[in-house]
Amino acid sequence: MLELRQVYTKYGQIPMLMGVNIKVNPGEAVCMLGANGAGKTTLLKTIIGMVKPVKGEVVFNGQRIDTLPSHKIIPLGIAIVPEREGLFPKLTVETNLLMGAYYENDKKKIALRMEEVLNIFPRLKERFHQKAGTLSGGERKMLGIARALLADPKILLMDEPSLGLAPATVNEVFSVIKRIKEEKKIAILLVEQNAQKALSVAERGYVLQKGSIILEGLKEELQENSIVKESYLSAG
Ligand SMILES: Nc1ncnc2c1ncn2[C@@H]1O[C@H](COP(=O)(O)OP(=O)(O)OP(=O)(O)O)[C@@H](O)[C@H]1O
Ligand SMILES: [Mg+2]
Image (cartoon, rainbow, N blue to C red; front, side, top):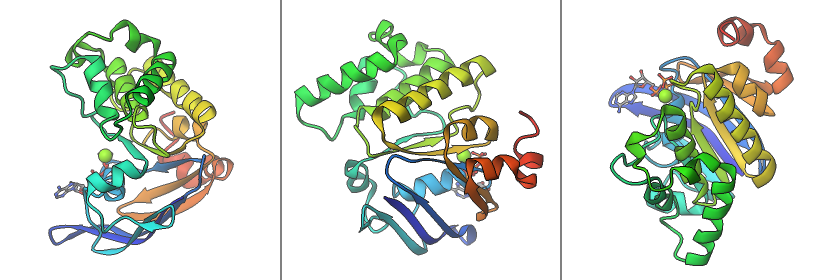
């Protein structure tokens, strides 16, 4: 469904991604583990066209998308929950959610999606008319995920959903991710430093180090791998 083939990116003269090959199949949850500065956010930005590869291809459902601008990529069915949620703090929860459905004109479809999403996130329903800037960190994270779902994506990209949250809130966020995976059957590409949590929802994963994929495998293989254990599971 989504494939990166030999993708290289640069920031100015500095190489970042160096020949990245990854695949996400329909309905599959895949995690991308990596330390600070490994290139995880860059990878997601490359998928949505915010960073252009200098070499290689990004292919989505058989179509090459790295040649397209972001506003043509997103409507194909790719939604992202950015690292810092990217919400509009002065606008209400409702308005922020509706931004997710920006590319949908059918009001009925939007209303249905809204109902479905508020079902998954009852707390957002309670805070529907509250300004996004007044939400707690966990609620903001939920709003970021909920907004992405309003786009009815085929694949959901998530950039470190555990970042900056207390352990109890991290657990809440990950149970929501699990629920989305089970109920909506959409593909998920989850970028995380929290390997324990990421591997609790993913079937498969990759490890990104300094712009290269150094390891890939099934959940169980990664959980047993000594590099993953030492570098990414030690804290958990
Ligand atoms: N716009 C930019 N211009 C120049 N360098 C950049 C730019 N964006 C990112 N970088 C650099 O590229 C490297 C990878 O950044 P990236 O944000 O992809 O890492 P990351 O794996 O997401 O890290 P983190 O876990 O801290 O979010 C970093 O060294 C960063 O400083
Ligand atoms: Mg990042």
